[in-house]
Amino acid sequence: MKKIDNKNLFLDKIKPVLRKSKFSTINMDDMARHMDISKVTLYKYFSSKDEIIEMFVDHCIAFLQNADVQLQDEELSWGKRFHMLYIQSLQCVLYMPDILLEDLKSVYPVLYDRLSTAELERHRNLRRFYEAGVEKNVFHPVNSTLSVVQDDLMLRQMVEPSFAVRHDFSLKQALFEFYKMKKYQLFVPDMLDSVDDAEMEELLLQTIQKISY
Image 1 (tube, rainbow, N blue to C red):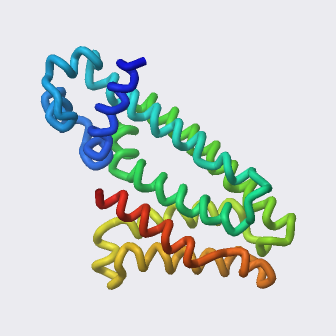
Image 2: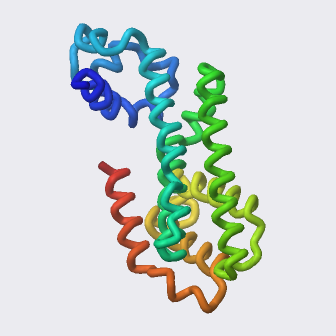
Image 3: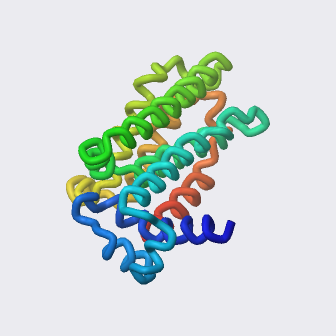
C-alpha cells in the first residue's frame, strides 16, 4: 500500500510537466529531477517512462469517470450542480490541454483512444444533465450537444495566456463572464435565483489559485 501511495505522490509531482511538455522531450533523468528523487529510487517504483505515462493517463481517465457523479444527485439544487459542471469542465481542460492530447495521439495512440472513450462517456453524461434540466423546465430548450461542445471550445480558448492579452481580460474575468453567459443561456427566468454568483466567484478563485500553485 505504501508503495502505491509513494507512486501516486511522485506522479503528482510530474503531472504539471507532462501537461505542458512533449513526451519525446522528457527522459527518465527529467522525471527523477521533477519528482525530486534519485534515478535509482525512480526505477524502484517505475520500470520505464511508458509506465509513468500510462499511469498518468489512468489518473486522467479516473477523473473523467468520477467528475460528474454529483450531477445526478437530485438532493442538490440545479444551481449547485451547474456550478459543479462548470468547474469540472474547467478542470478537464486544465488537466488535459490540447498539447497533451495532440502529443498523446501521436506517441501513444492506444492510450489516447482510451482517454477519448472516457471523454465521450463524460460528454454523454453532460448531455443527459442538460436534457434533464430541459425536461424539468429548469433550462431553456437548448441543444445539449452544442452546449457541451461550446463549453469545451470556449474554456480551451480562455485558459490560453494569449486570450487574456488579445481581449484585455484577466483569466478570472473571462471565466466568470462566460459562466454568467452560460447561466442566462441555460436557466429559465424563474430559476435564475437558484444560481449563486458569489459562490461561483469563490469557486473560480480557488481553482485559479490551485492552477497558479
